[in-house]
Image (tube, one colour):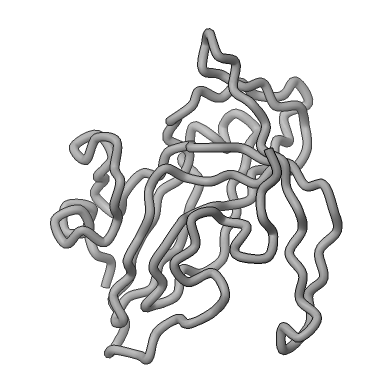
Length: 174
């Protein structure tokens, strides 16, 4: 069962909303752009996280006068303004808003596990050969929550309580 946007907002599953009435949708809640980063190092991924090392990132600045950023084709890491506290009987999925893919831009993110609490981020891929201009706080994605058949132990990984999408070992560089 999909949990509607009104219920997600009223249950405070998504937090730090810029404007709840403009962000709640019939099937979820819109997520807005806080920051954009690019990668400055390689990452290491393994089976049990003994060798895991997150890639370093560098935040790209918005134009101070227009609050926009122009992105050329490529891959970027985005952080959303909103944070979440996913109930232990729900799981989340992040989908791009249709205005993005109609503009040649995609958003990808993994499953938002039951019990996860913290920052939300995603991979932004600009495929439009002319690039894209994004405003700070632009609505880019929608979080959709599904009710599970029952409660689970919940997420307890390295990203729990994170303040950005790079987690604890991929600290952002200014």
